[in-house]
Amino acid sequence: MDGMKTVRVEKGEGIAWVFLNRPEKRNAMSPTLHFEMDAALAQLETDPEVRCVVVTGAGESFSAGQDLKEFFRELDGKPAEAKRAAEAANRWRWDRLYNYDKPTIAMVNGFCVGGAFMQLIACDFAVAAEDAKFSLSEINWGIIPGGLVARVMTEALGYRDALDLCLTGRAFDGREAVRLRLVNEAVPKEALRERTTALAQLLMSKDPEAYRATKIAVRRVRAMSFEQAYDYLGAKMEELRQRTGGRAQREGIAQFVDQKTYKPIDGSFAHGQ
Ligand code: COA
Image (cartoon, rainbow, N blue to C red; front, side):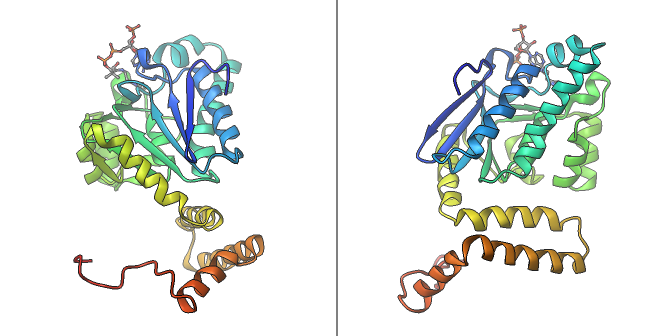
């Protein structure tokens, strides 16, 4: 991904670490950053070396949200440019990440503000530093949580908490983000990369086709009736079987039933499970 000014990608052991890379601006999202993130994620989705994508920020910040100068003030009165930038912003932060073919993790290393909640919630998992600082600060600028932010907040949180955070703009840390279920877990900052790597390794150990079909299925059924979900999940199961020839299931069952070499759950209660 040569020539990118605002995005940096490091690849290793199947993981692509995608850094929003404007640390001097706390990774505020400029139009250029949106275009580059959109291109980078599209490229990594079909890169055979990459089996999991981690979205994070360079320096002290995950992202300080939309760039107040470059995304808002400088695009004011330029409807064509503003539209192009907004489309790219929504495409990578939501459409791409929400439907991404590979496992995705948001690694929240510092400030996570406003528009950055979209990529946070679109990723399959989110791991935060305990002292990360979150805020939906739009209300403080006299605007609303736009793009899809208000909508995805109600997707991820309960109604009262979504309203509280959107209406007050109050800041909260990684521990509270866990309590709100906005992130899966919070760890001391020094352990963030190690913990994220371990999670990525777990996700990469799953059959990639089954992983992809499962995450899409869980997301789609949320808006369906039980009848529709029965139908949809049956069709999805058949699609997966057609795509893979049922290989992973057949191998797993043979290892469990015949060879006794595979047991997905530890059968003892020794660890208080
Ligand atoms: N848009 C544009 N520039 C931003 C920015 C944003 N969202 N967030 C930070 N920056 C810039 C600052 O203007 C500053 O630029 P400068 O060095 O040219 O003066 C630089 O990033 C560092 O910011 P600073 O405020 O000095 O860092 P900090 O560590 O003390 O505070 C934040 C970090 C994120 C808490 C603070 O910058 C902030 O509140 N930013 C606004 C976040 C926001 O409300 N975003 C939502 C927009 S809807």
